[in-house]
Length: 470
Length: 71
Image (cartoon, rainbow over all chains, first blue to last red; front, top):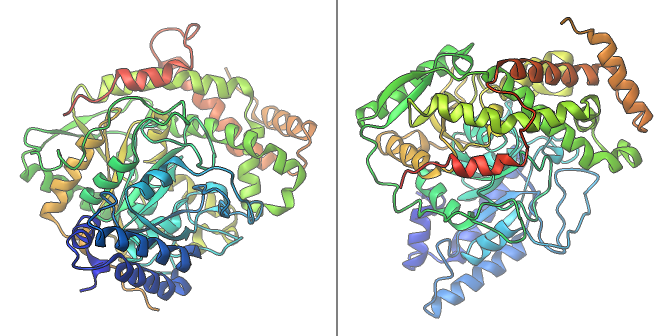
C-alpha cells in the first residue's frame, strides 16, 4: 500500500512521526499526478518545483523539531480559482489564461500556515459556470471510475484528483452543487458549509450572494481537519461570520444515538433512480444501527428554490462578466457565454424579490424541517452519473434536462445557505459512485461531519479507489 | 393571472440588446427568465405574512440566529 492511499489524518500522523518525509510524499503525489493526467486531465498545471521546495521546507522544520501545523507536509491542490499573488489563476478560462492576481486567498494562506504543500492548480468548469466538468479551453476533466463519464463540476478537478489519490484534499467551491456533485460522482466526501463560514477573499466570484468555498477529501475526519483550518472570520471578507469555529475533530466521535434523520416525502424523493434510492435506504439503515431514528418530513416550496437560486446566481454572474462579455465575448466558449449572459433575461425586480425571499424561506425551512429532525437526508445526485457525450454541446437541447436534474437536490441548499455534505454510499448500475447528502440547519457542520464519520466507521465505500489506466 | 411568456421573453432579449449584448437569443431568455419569475410568483403567494418590510440584508443575521446549538 502506498502512503497516497492513507487518509489525510493518517498521512499527517506519519509525517509528524517521521515515518515518511514530506519530500517523499510530495514526490509520490507529483508522480501520481503526472501519471493520471493524460487519462483524467484533472490538473491545469502541476507545480513540481514549488511543491518540492515547500516539501523541503516542511522537512527542514521537522528536522529542527518544529511542526508547521495540522497539515504539516501534506500535499494538496485546489480548484484554479483561488488567487495567489503574482501567480497565474486561470479560473478555467481563456479570458483569464494569463491572469495574475494581486492578492492571495485567505483560505490558501490558512492552509499554507497549517503546513500544507500545494502541488498544482486543478481543472474546473470555465468560470465555474456549469455542473458537469466540461471545459472547452483546458480540455474536459474525466471521471476516474470511468473516463467516458463526467466527474461533475464545477470543481471537477478537485473531485477527480482526490479520488485518484493524487492529493489528500482539495478546495472546491459550491454555487449550485459544485463541491457536492464532484464529491458524489467521484466517490469522495465534500461539504458546502454554511454560506458565511468560509472567507471568500481572493476567490473568483461567480455569485457573491451564493458562492461558498468548500473542501473535498476522502473521509469525514479528513474534512473536519481541513475545515477547522480554513473556517472562521476574515477581516478581508466582511461577509464572513464572526462566530467561534468548533473543533470539528474533537466532537467527531460522539454518538448519534437518538439523532432524528429526516426523510423528505416530496421533491427530493421524486424521480430518484431506483438503484440510488436503494443505496440511500441502505445507508439510512446503517445510521439506524447507530441509534438514529427516521422521521418523515415535508420540505415546503422546495420545487421553487432552485429557480430562485438561479435568479441570484445568473443575475450576479452576468453583472460580474458584463464588461468582458461586451468586449471579448469571443474568448468565452459558446456554452459558457450563453450561461454568463443568462442574467440579462432576469428583471432587476425579480432578482431583488429572490433576495428578499431568501430569509423568509430560510426561516420557514428551519421551522418546518428541523422541528421534527436534526439532519435531513437526500440523494446528492438523483440520476446516475451521465457521460461526457450526453451532457456536452454535441448533445444539443437534450442536454438541458440532464443539467437541470444534476442540481435538483443540491441547488435548493445554496439558496437557503445551510450546510450540506455529500458522502459515498455505493455504486450505480454503471459502476459509478453514489452520494448521499446530509443537510443541517445553519452552522451544523459538526453534526453533519459526526453523522458522516459514524457511517464511514461501519462501511468501506470511502476506502475503494478507482483503477485509472495510465 | 395568465402570463404572456412570448412577450416576456421578447422584452428580455430586447433589453439585453439595448445594453450592448448582441449574442443573447430568445432561447437564452426563456430558459431562465420565465422560471425565475414563476418561482417568485409562486413563493410570494405561499409564504406567510407580507413582504413590504423584508430587508434582504436580514439574511446573514437569520443564518446566525437560526444556528445549530449542537456542541
